[in-house]
Length: 249
Image (cartoon, rainbow, N blue to C red; front, side, top):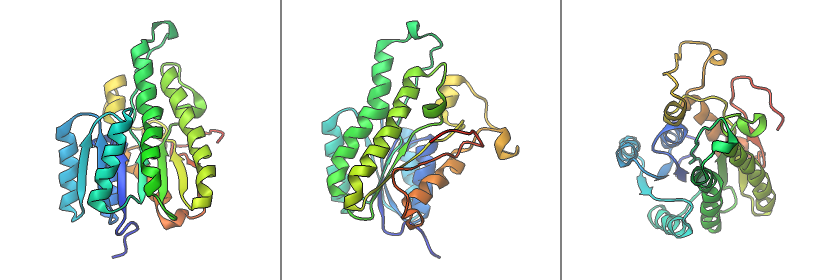
């Protein structure tokens, strides 16, 4: 049986639930060893770890704040110590605080959103970058709201737009080194985060794809494509698994 990521080592943030979890499990199924970074909820992280180990792959977990550069550097050193290298970095962690009036937005929530969604992403990538080599891949999670905007997620949408620019700029810098940098911009997805913040009910997956939110497993396949050799000519690009939303970019 051929697998796409045999022998690869992967670092994934926010992989204790949602899209990150789906990506971690799919990548493990395709032969990769997985390092998971998460902010809290140890029980969920350990469950994902057990599922990966049950597939015969290595799995290690780290809890901490990605906006802390020392945590990023310490985590990367431990991943390299355990796996020997890092081949693929998935920057997926994020948070959001809906608010329908900018006058009511809380400063602490704005700063936390930027720390979690883009500052932590840059700091972790900075720590990982010296260990990447020709053929390595970085994949960032952005969102359709980076292109459409969202009336209740002003700061969140701003961070997702920043991720698009970060992806394109880092791809330019990384080309001479043979490192590919891309992003995935999902549309509406049924995840624990969206359910928590918007109170969405569980999706009816029997409906045709364009009549419902995507499942996390449906989004994960875009990450797998970008991480695989099939995407050898893809860098500085954004994939849009969004159910048919037309966006520019």
